[in-house]
Length: 112
Image 1: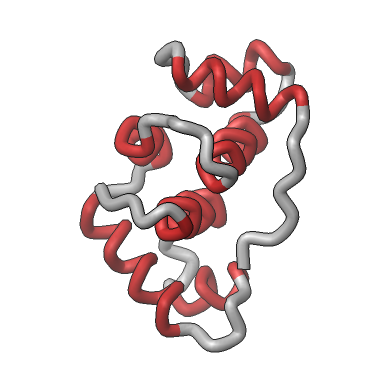
Image 2 (image 1 turned 30 degrees about the vertical axis):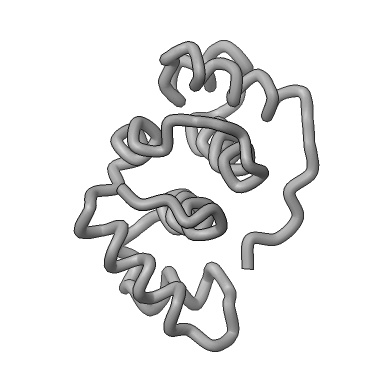
């Protein structure tokens, strides 16, 4: 479900920036990308196993304990394993990046 996740220079910079306590808005400005793109880079780093503070990332992404559990339940129960299906089933209540984040946490058995 997660898809391709190749390494890149910008992903490394976002991962390093998150470790330094920077947020996605700040990192997006530094890299001249939109915030959603910086979020994807950080989530990709987490999915790839980089040691990041996932709880801080959840806060930046607006993922609460309740939303984490709701998204996790949906990911676990769908059959076709597509992000679009998860988002559609959640009535567009959550962003793709919030769903990607929960999936990255599930890959490494991380909880909030």
